[in-house]
Amino acid sequence: MINIFSVGLSTTQRIESQEKRIYLFQGYLDEQFLQLEDLQDEVNPNFVEEVVKLFYTDSVRLIRSIELTLENTPWDFEKLDKIMHQFKGSSSSIGAKRVKKECTQFQEYCKVGNFDGCMREFQEVKQEHAALKRKLENYFQVFLVVHLAREAR
Image: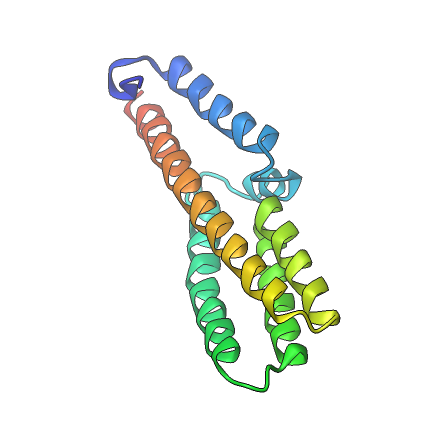
């Protein structure tokens, strides 16, 4: 692990850029994330982080709603599909490519009324959601160091 506090600004910028490319190439994020970053400026340097925090706040609510719906029988696949559609839209808005893919698969199981498929896929949705959260937390830590290094100059 590189100690980003002991390296120069250009090195931390390269680390930030490398982190972003890794997440894009690994399929965690898509170009929508880059478009969000384009909206960020000196006036609002934490824009992307704030949008991502809103996504995670909203997604916790949606995940809980899906859990509650899955606990009730008979299973309401139409309701599950609608909730997951909201979750997929939120995921898409921040460029969460893998999460969006799993949401789509969950919806496919809803369309055919496959409860076991929904349950398995819901676990995948939650795993990808958690993995992306860890990746983005790391990315924002690197971004903060780069931002602080820029301000110190």
